[in-house]
Amino acid sequence: MYSHEIQRILDGKKIAVGDRILLEKDGKAYAGLLMPKPLHGDEKTVIIKLDSGYNVGFDMTGLKIAKSHEREPREVGEEAKYEFGRTKKELLEVKFDANKPKVALISTGGTIASRVDYRTGGVYAVENPKELLHNIPELSHIVNLEMSSPLNKMSEDMEPEDWVKIARHVAKELNAGKKGVIITHGTDTLHYTSAALSFFLRNLYKPVVLVGAQRSSDRGSS
Image 1 (cartoon, rainbow, N blue to C red):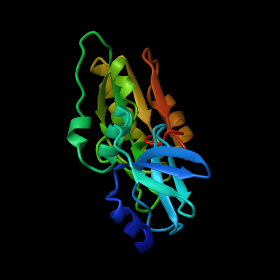
Image 2 (image 1 turned 30 degrees about the vertical axis):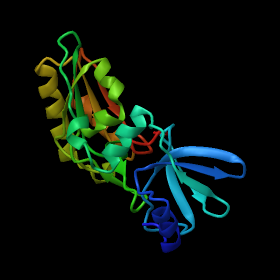
Image 3 (image 1 turned 135 degrees about the horizontal axis):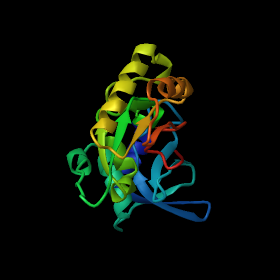
């Protein structure tokens, strides 16, 4: 939530969170979507999402702000709709293509399977593994992804029983005819899970890949 002073300026210009706005500061112009402000942070800062996907904050001192009537790039518009909870169902649709190989994507949690919470600046776990496809939509152009989540934990909470559960789930997907398996996992203990799976899953002739990230997958720098 923005301070009363900033909110008064936004209201006066009929600007709301999610609107595309134009900013000018120190002779430079910027365009982007007005984002929600975390509860904690500089009260004199306004945050926008640039067309590159990055979020940046601007000090209101000497800042000129106006509502833009230009159409935002399609990717930015879809990202904003998703973040503001308007069209989640629409963005999760995945079309099957018989000409593409089937690959299993198994989500087990971790930062890679999280999204930014703009109220706090932290991250929260996605509710549905299909949400990951929204962040990397080009994957659907290459393979048919079948997504599932046998568990959802930050990797520091992983236990040996979880390794067994993951191994059984991977074996099930491979035996069902998948050409390969991608496992999203937290980075803290990814190496432990990888080592455990190397003992559980022997003599593989299909790839099984574990992948993690230091930043949530909805960030441009992830």
